Image 1 (cartoon, rainbow, N blue to C red):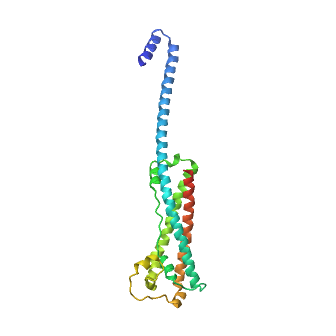
Image 2 (tube, rainbow, N blue to C red):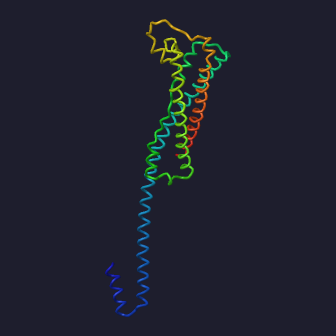
Image 3 (spheres, rainbow, N blue to C red):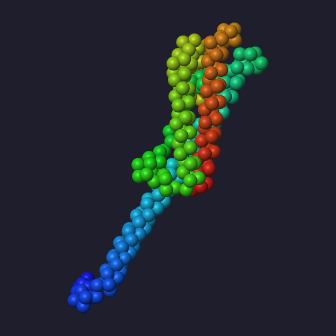
Length: 247
C-alpha cells in the first residue's frame, strides 16, 4: 500500500502536476490523521472497558464490605441502646425514682465495656489508589465519600468515649465498687466467671451509692457518650443502606 502511494506521487511529480500533487498530499495527510484518531479512539475504548471492568469488580467488593459493616453497625447500635437504658436506670435509682435492685451491679459493670467500629475498607482503599472514584456517578461518589468521612467522625467519638472509660470510669469503679465483681452479678459473663466462688457475697451500700456524686457524674457522661455514639451508628446504618441500594 505504501509503495502504491509512493508510485502515484512519483508519477505526479514527473508529469509536473504540482497542483494535483498538493491536493493528493493534503488528502494523504488527512487520511493519516484520521487513521491516528481512529487508533487513539480504539485505544481509549479499550482503556475505558478495562476501567469499567475494574470499577465493576471493586463495586462488587464494596457491596460485600458494606454488608459486613451493616451487620456490625446494627450490633453496635443495639449496644448503645442498651447502654443508654442502663445509664438511665442507674440515674433513676440514684434519684430514688426506682429502687436499687439486683440489676444495679450489672448496669454499673456493663458500662465498663468499650466498643469500636471496625469497617472493612478494602474496596475503598483499592478504588482510591487506582483513582476510580471520579469515574463513578456523582450521586454514588458523594454517598461513598460521605460514608467514609462519617466513619472517621464516629471513630473519633469512640476514642473519646473509650478513653473516658479507661482513664476515669473504670478506675473509679475498680476502686470504689469492687463488690460488683462476684457471682450474684446479673451480667452473664461475671455470673459464669464467679459461679464456683465460695466466698461470702457482699452488697452495694445503698446510702453510699445514693450519695455518690462522682459516680453520678460518671454515669451521666456514659449516658451522653452512648447517645452520641448511637447517633453516629444510626447515621452510618442509613448511609450504608443507601449506598447498597445504589449498588
